[in-house]
Image (cartoon, rainbow, N blue to C red; front, side, top):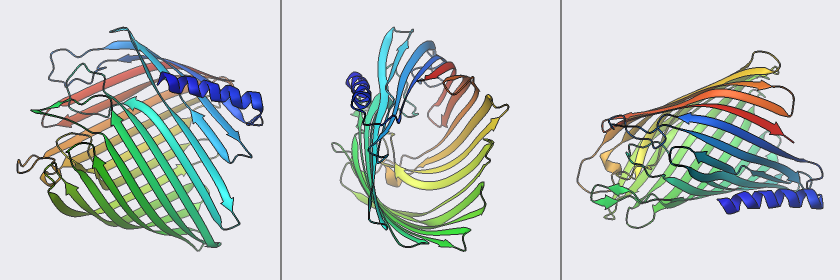
Length: 385
């Protein structure tokens, strides 16, 4: 990650020196101080959770060049925590490109590399578990008529964990490679409605002998745009999954998928959003290769004054791990889990260059095995130059 941080700096200086960005670049320094009451994500049943203060310094790089056809965004981050005097390196680097092949065909590509913390889990340890992720996307859009669009999309996702942790008498290995393909037909109806038919297929294989999961889905989505500041969407379809365990036994499974979304925003800056989705996906918990998620999410942003703004987010995710998605054969292991993630931030923008904020982030995980509570408060300052 240190090399990624230096690479972002080098690229930024190169764009400035050779004029590739033609003045269209922005560098942001973001300094924050966090208090974390459960830095190692220990379960609540543990006798002692570890709290600490840590410092985060990130450098945001945002550049556009070659007539805005290529966009570069880098966010390297350095963290130093006091509890064990340890320095960590995180961040991401994304490159996007867009090219028009005539008036009807547009090709877009994107590649994002990231190093991040682990997702919520019931692990109880003092090990820093992180992961490296690389996501590539290529999308081709064809618009044969003004109100009709056809899109083909390819996604590749490679994920590698920093540690293989004990799982009973076994070891977890969550490293995987995933390929996904999507075909979408979009039709605008009476200027206010957007009708879409979407087909997906994906193949995910874990490293080693853990197995994998292949899925195929089909759904229709209807969007309604009643005015210039509101959009509502509903979708419904089916998912078919082939789940392979570590003994190469394949179990077939199917279930409906559905979702709804409504977003309201005003020119003054107020935003309200509600989102719901039910889906089948791969599992980061080592006992299962498949899980079902019901996600409920709400976001809100309100400018109290032209310089003072409050924003909040609430995510309630219910996850079902069924026996048919188990990596082991004939053990009948199932689990229900709920994860609640919340945040609230008060931001003060002195001018377009100076920006300060104070806020709270919380993550609570509940299941039959353990409860994990993690709360953070932070104070930050952002400078754009």
